Length: 211
Ligand SMILES: Nc1ncnc2c1ncn2[C@@H]1O[C@H](COP(=O)(O)OP(=O)(O)OP(=O)(O)O)[C@@H](O)[C@H]1O
Image 1 (spheres, rainbow, N blue to C red):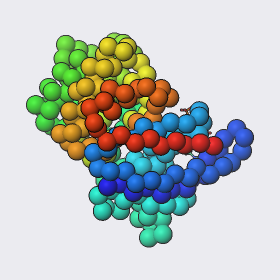
Image 2 (cartoon, protein in one colour; image 1 turned 30 degrees about the horizontal axis):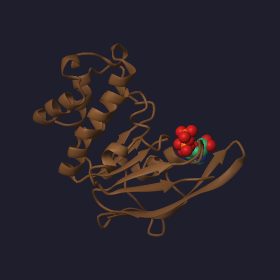
Image 3 (cartoon, rainbow, N blue to C red; image 1 turned 45 degrees about the horizontal axis):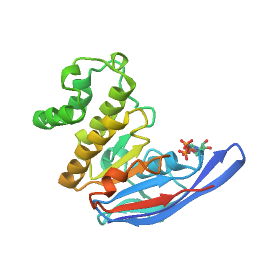
């Protein structure tokens, strides 16, 4: 179970306001986060990962305190070890596909499996600039999974994929999430994006973040 209750001041073009989010999320569930542009969806994911500090709040993951502003606890992103798929991928320009994964894990069998599901097996020596947008996005997803994270945070992770590739990838991801017992948060502007996951009875919840 993941319990989240945070308040973070954010600067918007309408002035300063407070992003307030709270909720309880079952282990192995997938939560779809939606809401208007600029509402704070990406900021919320970054607060969970530990990249951004909120003014107030707590985050507890399977009884471990990741954040508790009253007790002044805030684990570093390295200790939280959440997987993160950034909206702009944030790939390393000088690393090949394989090096991106080797940087995150020494488990070669796992790397091989990830490359297969991301359909990147034949592109292992390519650097990001020689990959298509969809291939770059799949690499960003694979890298986030390389550490077998307990919590996976995905910011518009399927935006560059065509419907066929997206469906195939979602089918594989679902199996991985079950195997790793990962709790997943996905920011998505497309309400239909996760229909494929829901159809198979995964625990699916929605979180609406508004101004
Ligand atoms: N570290 C920060 N501290 C304070 N404000 C921030 C910080 N990072 C982002 N913001 C502000 O928070 C607001 C929400 O940004 P965010 O990217 O989280 O929105 P979003 O809901 O993901 O939007 P979009 O759907 O357009 O990607 C923006 O106005 C941004 O300027």
